[in-house]
Each structure stands twice: as structure tokens, then as C-alpha cells.
Image (cartoon, rainbow, N blue to C red):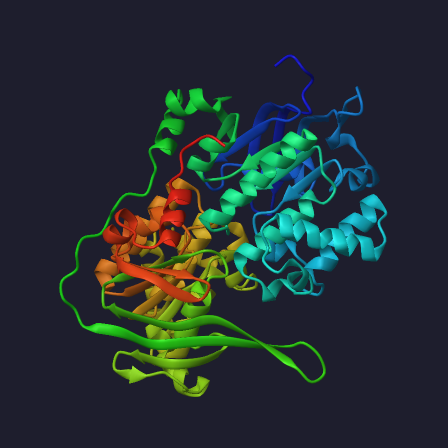
Length: 538
């Protein structure tokens, strides 16, 4: 291209210093992004992708940064080095000229304000809209990003929305002021395949309408192949390869790029032998009641008459769009849902329906959960050793301190983490490593059932493959049953024995993984599969 780059990064290096050591996260990378271009930055967890993106808007206050980040907006012929701008100048630019979609929406959203208020605040600050006009525009943005009942959702707080809905709120907030450059850090991580298509089509529509450039940071290589025009590949803080998407995918030059493109989930399980049933669910119903005024309440049914069964050593996958009831179902089985639950839940011959928390507490060690976002589920105030030891103290009080430490070290080795991890805190690990810690916390109690709620959604493809292999290995060794909740049908195909498909709170199809993925009976399932494995260029 001969035009002036909208953003030109020159010899950017980013270094973090602690009392113990210095770590160079990004090493002298250079790249250009042009007006209206879709540029993707890919690489393993910890390769420096997000650090690079955060450096553009100077959102790394503790980092030592060198090089240049030259910004040339379309309305101006003059470039500004963003690394030399004052904080006041950056505040006028953030959200208006350059906006960002953050990877973890629960961390990016304020829990004390409704999502409508948070989107409206951007419009009030940058566009000078009145509060009423800003809120009306916020509702329109929620509608355009695929949020159902946008007027009602605008009045909801972040914790009242599903993971996919929260991600759409963050996208709506970033698009509020029609920025010239949108930095999208894993923008579709929490979205199911059909909503992902809607969001990508929306981003393309806005780009073509407004000439917006997009810097996409993702581990979803099929998405990159369909969406991006150019790609940069990062490894250990360095930009090892970049070029046109089609050329890079068809003929990668660097060894690392070749390995990355070859890292796709493969079928890793075999048919299990007959084993006893560990979980039996009949007619499960989950409903929420919300106040709509002084004297009235509104009931919302999240799960309606769901039946399922699970045997030891078996993996049952649950798929469906965001808001279909997948996570509510999983939490209800563990007695962790705030919904009113009815129906029959039998775990290893014992009925759990209607049991108090005091009755369920002794059984917690046999029913564990790995949450979607390990950063939020791991206490930032506790070391990894304390996190893993906590469950042992509660459920195995007879163990001595030395015995607990021995089990913790053994578990760390089993999930592929070094023994010196025991004294480190969650923020010192990459996303893939934090997920290994979350898995270790669940498995160390030797449970019979583990609910896996989107366990690989935030991981790049190579780390995702490692985590899936770890889960299969642990399942074979310990005989655990998995209830796998995910929107990633490739993950279902890799490790699930059977599948349940949910739509609007109901189970619409079920069967063996092979039958459901290759011979779907319902139109809804066919749409999910088409969206998941689409290959045509967007």
C-alpha cells in the first residue's frame, strides 16, 4: 500500500520490572495498519499480543516502553507519537479515535452501574449527548450487537448477563463513537458461533460504512483466515512473520507459524466401557423471578424440563447459543444457581433435589467446577499453593501440612506446571497457565464429576490442544465424569462422548457426538454446525 498508515509501530519494546527480575514482553516489533484495513495479530498465550495492543493506548502504567507509535488520523496529515502524548491528550483520543474491546468483559465493566449507563457515559463524554439521548443510543447499539430485549438488558447489571451478553455490551461500548481504529482483543471469545457471525458481520458493515480499521487479537485461526486481510505472528515478544492472510495460511515461512496452523483440536477419546451411572437428571426446571414494580414480579424460565444422564469416565457436551441455559443447567446440578430449581437430580444414587447447602457441603469434594474465566475465579490474594491447599484443608482435615504440600506439588506436576509455581500469584501466569491452576484446584479433591464451563474459550489453539489433552489424560487416570459446557463444536468433537443441544432453555437434540455433528436432525443444530465450520471469506 502506498497510502500513509493510520497506525505505524516502529521498534516497539515493552519491559516490566519487579524486585526480583526484569521481563521483556515485546522486543522491537514494527508493523503498519492502514485506514479501513483488517489486521490480525496471533500467537500463543504470553507471546506479547495484548501487551502490544495495550501499549497503543498507553494502558500499561508500570511498563517501560521504547520506540514509536505514530498515529495519523484521517482528518489530519500530521502524525503524533502516542508514547509522547500527555495523559490529557490520550483521554481525548481513547474511545473516540481509537477504541478497544477488552478480553475479559467482567473485568472491563463496572459492577455498580447498569450496562446502559456505562455505554451512555461514553456518548455523554465524547459526543456531548444528553443522558436521555445517550441511553436511547445505547439501546440501539445493544440491539445492533445482537443483545436480545435490548431495552430490558440496558437496565441490567453486568452480573445479571451471560458471558456472551457481557462481551456484546463491551463491543457496543467500543463502537459507540465510531472510532477510526478498533482494537479487538479476543472480541468473540465468549460468543457462541451464530452470534459470532452476527458480530463479525456488524464489524464488517461498520468498517465499510465508516472506513474503520481493525486490529484483531485472537487465538481463533479459522476466524483470522476468514476475517483478516493481513496477519502478524508473534512468538515470545517478537514479530516472527507477517503478510497477506491467504499467502501466510497457504505457505507459512516460519517454523512457529507452521506449528501454530497445525494445532487444531483432534479426536482424542475412544468408546468407554460400560460403567455405572453417576448422574441422573429428570425434568429439571430453573426459573428466575425479577421484580417489575412494587406489587408485581416477572418470571423467567432459563431451563425447561431437561433430562440427562452421565456415567463415570464419560464426557457429556452441552452446546447452544449464549443465553440458551447451558451454564444455568450446570450450576443447578451443583447447587450453585440462584434460580429456583425443581425436578429430579440424583448423584451416585443420592437425591440432591431440595437439599440445603449444609447437606450438600460434604459432597462438594465429589462435584467440582472449572469456570470460564480463571482470572476471576482464582483469588488474587492467595498463592497457587494456598489456592490448591484450601480444598484439602476443608475436605481432608486429617492430612498433615507435609502431606498437603506433597499433594499440591504432585498436582502441579500432573497439570504441567513447575514446582516453583507454588509460591506465585495468579497474575504472574499466562491465561493458559491460570486455566491449568483452575483445573488442578478441581482435580486435587479427586471428584467424581467436574463441570467444565467453557474451559478453553480464552486459550489460543496450541494451548487449547494442550489443555484438552490434559483433561483427557486426567479423566483416564482418575475416572472422572465431565459435563462440558462450550460453544466450540471443535472442542466437542475432540473430547465429548455424547452431546446435548440447548435452545431457549430446552434440550432440542441429543445423541452421540458423531451422530449429532455429522447427522443433525434439527434445523437449529444444522445452523450451529454451519456457523461453527464456515470457511468462506467474510
